[in-house]
Length: 159
Image (cartoon, rainbow, N blue to C red; front, side, top):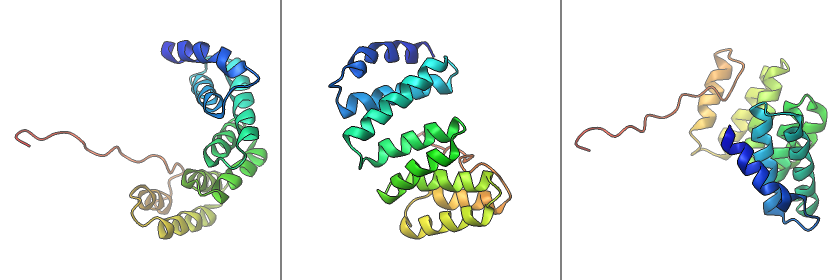
């Protein structure tokens, strides 16, 4: 938590600059978004939104920036406004945005829509190992598609 504060404070003057680059703005938005998620204060929410908005103005076709803004807005309760940015990120080929929309469908009692969205993604990305697990969670009646166990990456003795 303390590191996020230090990094957000460090990047602040660079991000505030009127000629801040897209990369600086996106990094500042992510850091402030993490600060918001850690409940470090409302300033982090405001700054995160301002920085990602400026990043999108610099690169409107950035799937990552549109995804980030859509997530920030949706998580803050602005589902309708957030969906606009998530839809844009999907149109730009950002897979995680489609998964986030499936999560939103699920939480809005549109389970069939969530499954349809995830199955379509599975067809598009047959090598993605996460999407089939998400489909299974939805089929099991779960409401959170990111509740996937971490892979076992432990090293076996003698390996």
